[in-house]
Image (cartoon, rainbow, N blue to C red):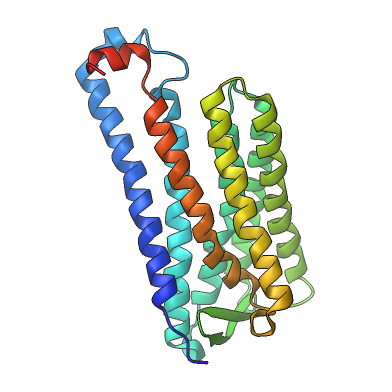
Length: 259
């Protein structure tokens, strides 16, 4: 079946819009800080939006990467036979999603817990190593065929299994740590934010596994299928950002803006 880029482009457009929303929120916070001055900043609530800037930056980064994969796949499937470096670029992009997801969970959690940051740091180190591997290994990923709205890739086996182990460990870590954070977080609003991250992760992982298991044309296309279902993850992140926007202002900041 001929490949259609419409789904990938629509998904990328949504992810870009939400990423821009997060960045606009960051810009608004910077403007408010300049308007309120240093005196007010000294009295900020520890759970204020000043502390949520890392959450906004990390969320925007995840969304940019998700959109980047979609656009890379569109370019790959436009000329499969001469895709060149693009298949490896697609995997370079998604390599950084597990550590960013783990970091986001740690940044949301209150009170701050160093133990939650440790897995993120470990996966960032692993991602750096895997990035070097992908750059140096021309056979890491080669586009084989594009079908309908997803792509199949050929990989050098069995060493690609190491990449799979890394990636699935990262996703499992996101599910586990989001559950731990939800149960232990001291702030009700942040518990809901963590719930959106965990639920969004499950919402794209589980359907992807089911589709590739029970839909014959999709077998062997798990990376592509997962990134399409990651639209559900992006929707969960959008809901999380909406919650953050409603709850991030401290009483001092709200009073300063008459809200």
